[in-house]
Structure formats: C-alpha cells, structure tokens
Image (tube, rainbow, N blue to C red; front, side):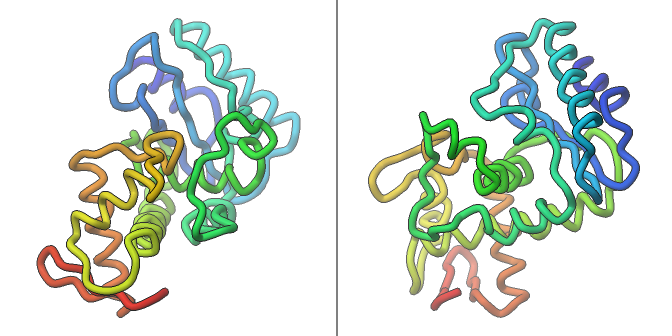
Length: 221
C-alpha cells in the first residue's frame, strides 16, 4: 500500500478537496496494475500546478514499479473541480441518455470533458480508497454520485415494476451485450449492490421511486 500512502502524502496539497484511489490497484495492489487517482478541489489547477501533479504521479509509478495507462491522458482524468464532480453526479457526462457505451478506440472522445465526467462518476461509485482531504465534501459527493448511479439503472431497465436484480444487471450489460470497460465500467459484486441500494434509497427519499423489499417501481425521471 506504500504507493497509496505516497499519493496521499506528497503529490497534491489537498486543502479544499480530497484525493482517492480507484480501479484495480485500489482493490488489489500489484505492479501489473496502474494507480488510478482522482484529486479534487474548489478551483481549477493552474497549468504549472497540474503539470507538477502529473509528473509526480508518473514518478510515483516509476518508483513503485507500476505500469502506466495513458489511454485517457492524465490532464483529463487526474484532477477535477468541485463543480465537475457535481456535474458528474448529475449525469452531465451522458449527453445521450440512451447511449452508455464507452467510446473505445476514440482518443478524442476518451479525452473529452464529457467522458471525464463519466470517469469521475465511476471513480466515486466503484471500489476506491479515500486517501486524504475534506471528508465532508467527499461524503456529500458520494451521496450525489450514488443517486446518479441509480438513475441510469432505471433508465436502462425501463419504467414499471422491476426486481432490484434487474437494475443491477442494467448497469453490468447493455441491451446489445456490452460489458465492463466497454459499457459503464461496473463489475458484479457486493459493492455495486450496496451503491445501487443506497442510490435507490436517495431516490425514494426524493419520491422518484418506490422500493418494496426487492421490487422497484418507477414511472419516469
């Protein structure tokens, strides 16, 4: 876990945001996996500060023998403002609410502002490690992200009365069979169930959904 400690302690002075690690290394640390990091703050980083952060992350990978994945550039995925996190939780990254496929093989789309918002939402709703920073901001944005995660499940599954398991399946596979990183990036398991259960509870509180044990009733959102 030393790479995570280094990421928390040295790379970015988190004063008004927080930092977290997500992805495979956060779950199963090892040299075969890159270290996916997200740093947040109230304001955009100046180009020089962002450049220093990127170089620090690359050096961290070298020092700990980790592989680098730059299919999505660090300038796009490493740092997000508070507003970007809020927009991600509000599903602004999905311009077309009927198309959730990942634009695999399209570097322009993968490094676009819209896809950055999708990555942020994924980081907050998949297994991750809180590293340092403002825990209150983190918890508020986790609640919003979990709510945001539940909405695509409802939209993909469709309105009406559905089993909770159908909503989970809707996040794991598209109607035409896309899964994993080619779709929304979720994997089956207890974490996704817990995130979706909490997200549905938020929608129940907002009176958008009715939840009766393992049955969800939804008309439209």
